[in-house]
Image: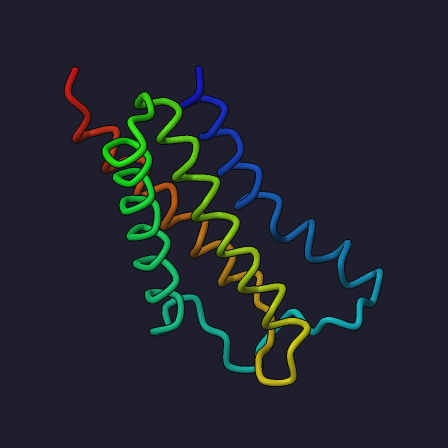
Length: 126
């Protein structure tokens, strides 16, 4: 059940990105959401993907082993932690003078979190 909910969440976040971008453009927020050289396959997207995967794994380990949480509870904590940091990073980039927020970075964060979820699920003892 949780896997299907998570899969639907990832699907709607990825598939709805173009529609959501149009909604953001119509609001004309003060936060710039696009870099002029923001490619889908740049080093930055790989960094976001790998970092989100790592954060999911390390936070799962901490919740499961150090805090003795059940597998589902530890997995929920790990996914929430990774996504929260990714969204927080983009909010920081959008509000600071040094960065530019990117919805493509958010997609890479979501995919990295999903990859971490998948790797943990595959490695889980049944």
